[in-house]
Length: 484
Ligand code: FRU
Image 1: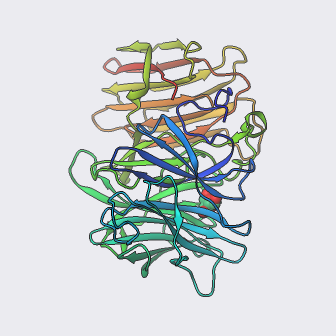
Image 2 (image 1 turned 30 degrees about the vertical axis):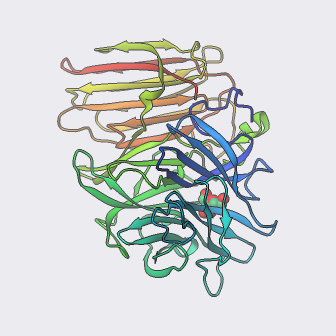
């Protein structure tokens, strides 16, 4: 793959060539290596002929491409989305002499059925053998809408969530050995339905600023997102090993942009940390974005996110979503202001080779008056991506002033409502990387992932504040990011 094209993100994972969609099989091994598999069509720039591509990383930013991990047996099959676990105790019997065996659980898609299958790896996740007893879960009569198994460990057993996509049902199955599975419960018609449920994820996440944890069920819907096309929702709740129950049955979105779909949590992280990565695109336009014809690849992942959950606003449990250890990429300080006041900070980042920049704004003593704005601009064409936050609650983004992609579904503007804390303190962070912008307000209580396609690289950042009362303090730091 050629990673030097002007549209190619430099700190986000993207496939060497051809088409990528969902993250699959995400896990952290005992040696500290992160494994990312992904829906991959190695023969075209659109979906079809799906395989599991594979990459590894020590820090979730510097990725090394690996061989394709799981391929279809023949051209009547595709290997769809799924997950992976480390079978430390050899519950499966595949790993008599090791504690680092990996089992992948995935959907085999054919013209007449979708079934759940497993494959095992004795070399730590690089090569896989398919289990002779596949499929391990199938329906009778067969269904073509039964997919995306995500497996976790709960006490003494394994738990699979899997989607009966067009029935709006998430099935929970349990197993002692990853081979024989028993249906335990159904969770149906909750939250937003869209036209299909896909990629369920059951995960235990830390409660912010405490040692507690809580279960979340993520369900991706496509099409039918409020923003159009594909989006992921989460339902906070409790899980007893067989049944999931929501705390309040409200649907909450992981993102208010349009480019955060089919996200998955990494298996094997410490209970005090939950790490999430998503496909940074949307089925409404992901197969026609201009990186295909111009550079021969399509789609990147989001940056990895650290996830926790907090219950401090009127809306109840909010997912907090921040860039995972982004400071490990800080290369060059580009700008700093300890008290911006009602003025602006302008930074020329054309010297940053990666084109990737991070900024963080810290605000204290804010009341409901005041606003922050940021603009990333091309000094050559004046194309821009911009956004801002009105302290009385509205957070917005506009990617419409870029000229490299014209598509009716490539919506220009997004907004979310975000009350600030009574203390008047909050943060705003953003990561931009050539063709993708991610913004995080209020420690990631609201966030948006947004691709954009300029005809000339963006190279200038302006952060400004206005309408601030006398006591409000706004500090800003801007960092150029190291090429990953
Ligand atoms: C979600 C999805 C999954 C499916 C995979 C196929 O984006 O449609 O439901 O397994 O993509 O590539």
